[in-house]
Length: 410
Image (cartoon, rainbow, N blue to C red):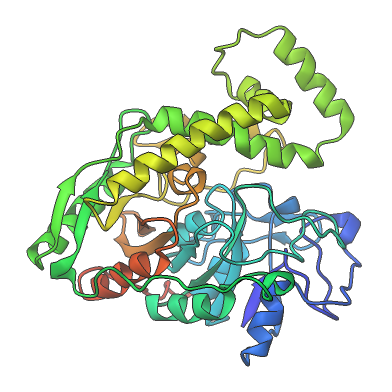
């Protein structure tokens, strides 16, 4: 198998997509690699990432651009875009990526493979770049490691190997994940959140999601349109604060100074993406604690919601794979969807649902758009009930298209 080039592999150059680490040869495996190799995996290579895993596309100065196997003019997503492209193209049967704002789930959706974002802190990420090589810190409140594969069974196998307390904590902690709530489609209580006015979904995707929900219902599943009761907008606002607080640790001081000046000249309720980015990047510890309290309230709403439902089905993001766009000003990018230009920052809206609340989320391939691009469905489940979302993915394999190999390259 291969692993994302954000994970250190002993004796193999690990760059994190950064030119400053282009010659970095780790002397120790990342913890996920230790677990995989101990279980018998042979890691024969690395897959491409954007610079510091900081984009929803995959390209860098060292290794260039990664294309989508379904359409080379399109991105495979990011930041685990190389992972998803390699799995889809048949270069590797299994991959391990990382996810903070959809970085496993979006590439899985764009490339037509299965992906799993685990419950937060289920899998240690020591040895992930960033932070810099040699860092011991890994607790940023949102980043997780997760597998990508061509079947739900392989996701489950990988999770069984990867999940567990850190090696330094095993003397006091053991993992005992609950079994899947259900195994048969007819027993699942499924909530459906297929679209939302705050972040409308591409028509072809919305149609595919509804068709899948209808097919699941025909197989006996109880499918009901429902959500936990908070707005996508509120959830995404919280995400942007927490997300930018994390990524700002790598910003140079001049950039932070510019952000400080921007905030001085902006209203407190300004929704401009640059202002929102600056607000999160410069958040005080006091304000971070306030935001975290709101996050905990959302988690409590999810807990109550999952007393009535086993899983929630929703989009992975608002569009299928889009054309490569390497404008260095990431907040000047737009994505055309159904004749409209959508701002690049909207990419985080649907993925942030699971990220904010630390929930497991599995991506299932459910077909292709009229343009021939893969469509994935996000299955969100209760905290620490990762086997439930994967069980739904397994049970749905006879209903959904599942993995389909991309057409031969022209």
